[in-house]
Image (cartoon, rainbow, N blue to C red; front, side):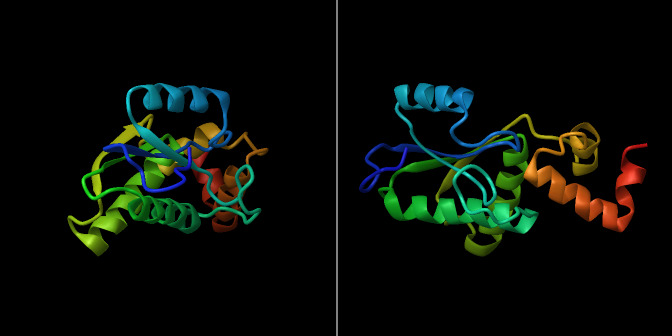
Length: 159
């Protein structure tokens, strides 16, 4: 949900979705509706290459930058006392961690983020790829597979 003016609620969630689907998937919209019912404002966004965003192929750097850009946009819309919760699901958990690490390095305690929720994070990218390597319809996975294939690492990881 995009606020038309500054966000009036004191609790805001920045939601970074997983690699499957996009911000508008029915189960994600159901979650947003529950969060809104409990008084949160929700900003969900798509990474480059997902849904109706640009058709640029996503990379680790671009999805992290997309999260940081969404966070910056949100900081400019909220009132000073508003608490931001960064919520990442699966791939979004990794994106959230990476983006927040950079934000805290750059801004210290002035990120505006009060908490992070990491839903279904993965242990490491190699383990995630072992499971996801057959999902060649997914643009993000395709690009990861290309990178690891060029490095010769994919065959090592799937054994």
